[in-house]
Amino acid sequence: MTNGLTLRQQLDRYAGPDSLRRAVADVVAAFAEAAIAIADLTGRGALAGITGQVQGRNPDGDMQKDLDVRADQIIRASMKGLPVAALASEEAIDVDILDPSAPISVAVDPLDGSSNINTNMTVGTILSIVPTPADIRATFMQPGTAQLAACFVVYGPQTALILTLGDGVDVFTLDRDTGSFRLTAATVKIPADTAEFAINMSNRRHWEIPVQAYIDDCMAGVDGERGRDFNMRWIGSMVAEAFRILTRGGIFLYPADAREGYGEGRLRLVYEAQPMAFIMEQADGAASTGRTRLMEIAPKALHQRVPLVMGSRDKVRRLERMYTNPNVKPENAPLFSHRGLFRI
Ligand code: AHG
Ligand code: MN
Ligand code: MN
View 1 (cartoon, rainbow, N blue to C red):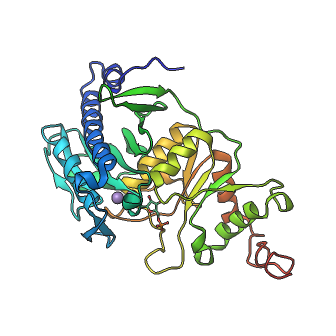
View 2 (cartoon, rainbow, N blue to C red):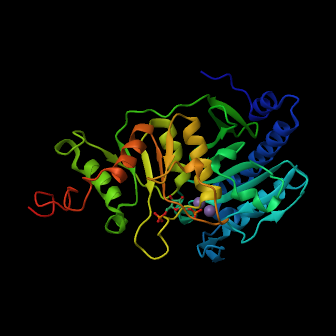
């Protein structure tokens, strides 16, 4: 199944004599070390002074908790002295310029799922590595297809690191005895035929009709269009949902909705959606806004949000078809229809 390689060994194999690849490998290795420190903090919780208390607000107006701030500091410190030109973080308004001559740049979500911190649920950290363009100001305006690597770490019962270097997706598990990540699943593929969806159902009334129609079909189960029952999960940590999808398939949606400030959904393009999209595609899955392949979107602003639908390829394609299907109208969606669940 796997050969138990350490992450470092795997990165050395990938890098070889190539200097750009060496830069990517060194940054991933440093990110992994930072993640081990964050895993230690999340694991120790209150013992390490982590309260989950709100400290302020980040550039996007989200509440910022103590672990958001500590994780951001740990990641920043880990990038010092590495060949990184620019660093973007969810927790800082502006890009930080480190070594402008460096060939690569990084974008991070230091702590994903931070509303879960004080409930002892899974959180994580996300990394995207891009080439530094000639005009450094355009670094984080490149489409997702420009990414050289994407990675996320899940601090769950196990600490797992999921990595793509552009040639498949590998999963490494933290070996707490040696303090190193070991390969535990190589070249993972998202199962195509699954019956599980993840969405925050409490927002249903605010979604666009194609999303309502898609989820309503799932909810209708064996009695509906799909002819099978579905299962639902919502953890509130995209990293945990993504790990589950890589393990047993399914679909995750954080669509645009009609609430104020949610016109482009909730998740941020540069350091949440783009790296997830890269990993999903590299695992034979897909990622979309519902209308557009996510990897093809070029960000216009650093903290821009984007609707995100990701997971098993067939499921994502089906949702996309809802957006182009002329029959998907309010009167035809099951929960709206005269014969529907609420109108009997
Ligand atoms: P972050 O903690 O970095 O702000 O991201 C949280 C995200 C994501 O992980 C999760 O899927 C989503 O926000 C949860 O949103 P709701 O609370 O609206 O369900
Ligand atoms: Mn996040
Ligand atoms: Mn975050």
